[in-house]
Structures are given as C-alpha cells and as structure tokens.
Length: 391
Image (cartoon, rainbow, N blue to C red):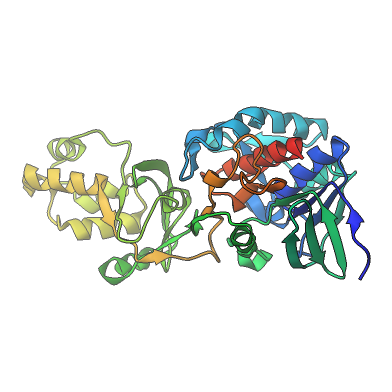
C-alpha cells in the first residue's frame, strides 16, 4: 500500500454535489481528492431528465424543500441560486430550454453538465472505480483507505448521496459514516416514488397506462400535474410529488377536475338533461377513466333523472377522491431520499458537522429533499458551493 498522500480535502462521491464542491475548493487553491466507487462520475446526472438533465428550477426556494428543519436550506440556496448556475451553464455555452413550472433542461445531453463540472474541477484529482474500504479520524486528520491506497486530509466531505436508484450504485454508505462520527439520522425513506395500491383500489389497475391532469393532495401539500395509473398503483408527476409527503396510513386525495367550477354537474344537468355521466366526464377525462369513475359513482341514468343531491355528492367525490396506498415502489424506483443526516448536527452556512471539525455533509446525504423538477440538483449545487467555500 502506498504512503499517505497530502491533500487539503477528501470528497467521497463524484455526483453533482461532490463535483461542485471539488470545483469550488480546487479553484480556491485547495488540493482536493474526489473518490467514488462507481466507474464514472455524475451517473445520476446522466439519467436525469430523460438524458437531458433537469439541472435546476427557476422557482428554487426553501419552501420547495422537505426537512426536519425547513429553514436549514435557506442560507446555501440564497448564496448560490438557480441564476448563478445558469451563468455557469452559459459560460460553458450549453444551450438550454425551460419546460413547465420553471424546469430547465439541456437542449443536448446531460453529458454536457457532467463535462462542465469536470472542467470546472480540473485542478482536483478524481478517482472513480475506487471503493472505500475504511474511514477513520485521529482528531485532526481523516484517513481514507480506498482501493489500494491510503490518503489523509484535515477535511472530509460526505457527498455519497442516499440509497435511491441502487442500480446506479447508490447505497446508504453516508449513513454508516454518520453513525461512525456520531451524527444523527432522520429516518430515510423513498421520495418522488410511485405509490402502490391494494385491495379494492387495485381495481384501478385496469386503467394502467391512463394519464390525466389532476390536483393531488397529501400531508398539507397539493400539486397540479399529471397522474398516471400503473399496473401497481399510481405514478406521474403529481403522485411523485405527494409521495414525498405521504406516510403509511395516510390517504392521498385526487381532484380529477381541478379546473371545474363548483356546481358544474348540476349546471350540465340543466343544460343537457339527456346526457349521461360517462359521456360528460369523457369530455374532460380519458374515456377509460371516465367510464370507471362513472361506474364507481353509480349514476347510470341520464343526468335529468338524477337528483341534485346525488350530483352534488358525485361532484364532491370527483374533487376529493381518496386513495389509501399500501406502500411505495421503494428506493429502486425513488428519484431521491427524504430524511438522511440530521441538519441539527450541521452548520447551515458551511455544511460542517458541529461536533466534528473538518467533516462536511452535502447533497442528498443531508436531510434536505426538493420537489420534482430540478430542485434537488439546485440543492446539490448550493450545498456543494457552501462546503467548497469553507474547505
């Protein structure tokens, strides 16, 4: 085994947060080593946004993030904004476009973002395909045994992410390190993940492949985006969003017609008394979904023959249809992780552990989780910059 090499900082994880941290620290003259067990850097970046990387969101703000401390992300997000990252993208002449809800994507490939980060971190040493075998601390320096090498530095950055998408090599390694250094954990659970349905609600599996715009609500949060019925339950952007707030035993409420005005069904009855509910719903919803909902509502006759009270009840149900998921599709299908290393043990200015000087935690490993749509990448950039400036 080779002798320990002198570095100012060792960063574990060559994802978005780790690479950004390395770039900022190296450009400040720090000697930085990045270690990752994956064969290539930025693997999660490469698959994001359908291969075009939804690299930030113009609406990034602390209230779009989940954390046991909802104020923790405020400092880093304020000091490195979506506009700051856009300026970096512009510097590297990467063409981009805005989709819905402030989501920004590369016109070309997510590979451009990885290349940009590697170019920015050119002064750092990056070693991929190098599994970490041991990490220790003697009170002043951190020692890392990785591959066949042993390295030391006064600072160590945990940027190994959470356990979401294990097929990319994601693990709970950050949590093992946290326990080793006495940092607390907020229970990690899958987020931005499809929900599964069982029992009576499993009948909606017949609608597998059907998607429609809805408003989904859970845990005090509401999102107007598309929902998708699957052979296991429900997915689509609206469902992925509320999944981050969902806990076992909670119901998810769906408004299938969020644009409809109150009393619309009674008004339809007055204007078109011979119309039937499946046909009326089918004017605004996919046919298979309209038929299934009408059947569940039990209004088979012409609207003119249905009492106003029955129509009012149907309207209420359509605007507040309750599903009780029996679970999620787990970390295998989760885009990110809710929970992680407790922010109570970290400085919100620098991301440094309060009780372990020189130890930093950034990115998804921290108990900060953004909404769907580029928010989690913005947290990776912002937390990486915060730590990189403090190394």
